Image (cartoon, rainbow, N blue to C red):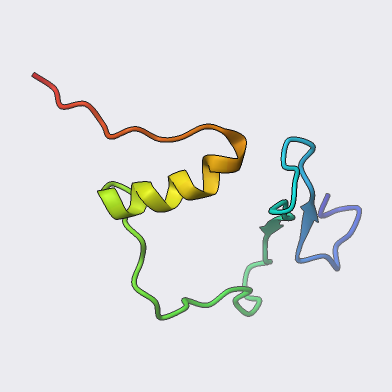
Length: 76
């Protein structure tokens, strides 16, 4: 793709599986070596997805698709 559009900094699309009022575009960004950063850190604390709060956040996003992430099982 970079050869066909060397001016582009990435691409975006709307997945056919992503539907409904919460549908959004997916973006893939890339940069050439030596170019300025396309994204910068937000300064917000990262959301840890391996605890109850993170799992709840992910499950709220997945709810419209009627899927979810369960708590990991402990190994015996």
